[in-house]
Amino acid sequence: MTERKFDLEHRTAKFGEAVIRFSNNIPRETATKPLITQLVKSGTSIGANYCEADDAESLDDFCHKLSICKKEARETMYWFRMIAAAVPNLKNEARLLWREAKELNLILNAIVRKCRTNQKK
Image 1 (cartoon, rainbow, N blue to C red):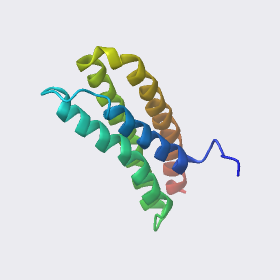
Image 2 (image 1 turned 180 degrees about the vertical axis):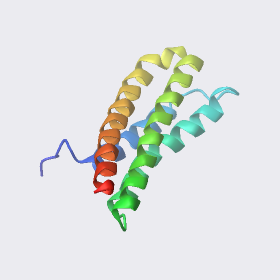
Image 3 (image 1 turned 45 degrees about the horizontal axis):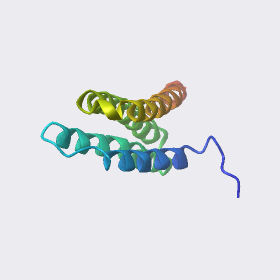
Image 4 (image 1 turned 135 degrees about the vertical axis):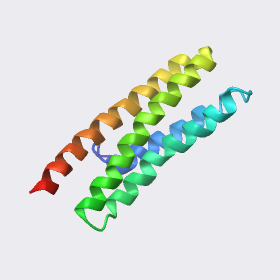
């Protein structure tokens, strides 16, 4: 079976898995423990909320759930930045994952904009 590049459910799940693997490599210290928790919560929440959007009961519900996905992606970008500051030797890996979070945010933002346009019709 071939994987479709535009399958956001799969892509967001793979991203959540990557966030978990990355977080397991972060040293547990006073400054990093809360950052790890926040990163894992927001990074895995993108896919969870996308699944909820996929099962939305209405267009309004769909748009709302996707808006949450986009916000979680943006928040995840923030936590990667904080972790890169706290653990400089993980900066390059954090940057790669930050870019994927940014791409997801841009994709979701475009969908939300289109969704809101359709809501007004």
